[in-house]
Length: 262
Image 1 (cartoon, rainbow, N blue to C red):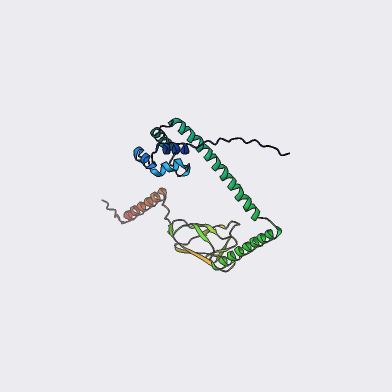
Image 2 (image 1 turned 135 degrees about the horizontal axis):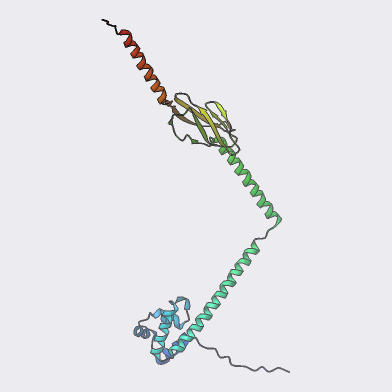
């Protein structure tokens, strides 16, 4: 026995744009006439009737278009605006869902293509080791061709000093051999050095050299002029000398005086 199915009529609600279009056509008004009377672009009116929300300007303008359009053809303006707002909200929601779905599909597609296997891990670590070896070789070659770093923090430039000694301080590359005028100077684990040099009167040429393990040398020269400062003579010493000189003069005069008696 065949089962009888009952058919039910489904009411499909027309969109705001479709209702406006029907009403306009029923009244025999062309879309060009609407455009001329309302001063609205024909393309905007067509997009409203065809539900092309992406091509329309912001909602604040579209709602104004719909109100003017509705009043011109005798439709309920607020009802059309409310209907448009609901349709736009649904459209935005559907687009967001489609966007999320598309993003998930892309992620799944990428994850399907990227499958970590022992072979991929082996290739990755092999490339990583080759990179480390290449960097090491490049660093060694660069070090071989370049002179060691040498910075003199004191004295910064040539200078004149009234002291008999001067401090030579600075930094060089670790494991470099440092010499000042041919004499070895201690360099700590961070490359810093500090040495006191005795000066002789006049110009002192300080030749500072740093030599790395590849026998590359950096050199800096400082000229230090030592001018010995004259020490002031004590006042007591001057007074005693003046007194002694005066006494000598008096004795000398007394010897020259001749006594004339009666």
